Image 1 (cartoon, helix red, strand yellow):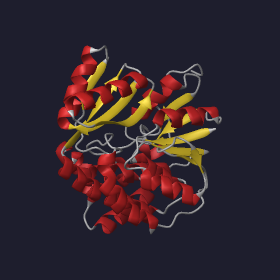
Image 2 (tube, helix red, strand yellow):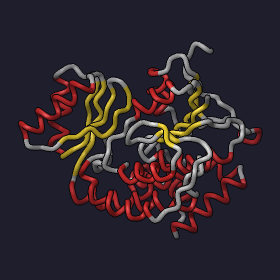
Image 3 (cartoon, one colour):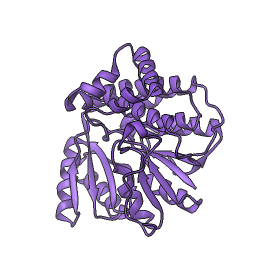
Image 4 (cartoon, helix red, strand yellow):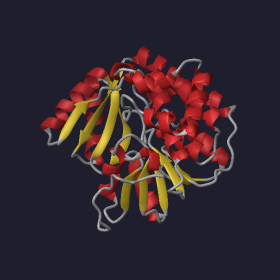
Length: 316
């Protein structure tokens, strides 16, 4: 079984999508459709914008979503049996499996960015990556640090065994990262991401974005989706809708999503993004599976899809 996996915010790159726009009429049409919808040329930001411009949430989220949906749509060499998206990537996954339309995806991602940015500016929070300690140990320690300092800290992403993202007040994240480094973490650093997606800080955003999601048409998907809030496989439109409403305040269960896909028979994982962010995680968890990418495609004029980046596996 084949899975398309879609990364979230953080995989944006200067120039992303320009090759697709220049070489594929269908891609160009979708970019222009997005430009018309947003009332501005998001494609120009993607193709010519600076790193700082791409880092702005109102640019990052539409850019990543648009790139991933277009890349998955224009290729015909690989047909997925299931999809899964990490954080923002779930919106791209839901368009690709036809749960929601491309236009509704644009609307939801735009509003997610704008609403989320408002909350970020209100709370002045931060996120941090911790690698090399068990989830159980981190959970115990962030509760202790919260109790000791009064600074809230939450799990935001369960990315893989020994690899998580925490979120909370700026002071809380600084204190926690310093403590984890002193306690044996391989890495514990604040991230260059404003705000605290996937935590209770986003409660107001859940309500506002949830109202928009409730008014959006959800259809029976053509293939199942594994969702962030519970890591499980879903095909029922109303279940998918309810999970998407909770998406912004709940931690990303990528560890469970990957394990469940493998348990259900997925043995080929294709990342639909700009780099190998998710591949590195999945390859460690599923060493006997094919883990590859659709982002590097060499000679575009001969492109159907060339899978040039493949992680080492027993199949090689």
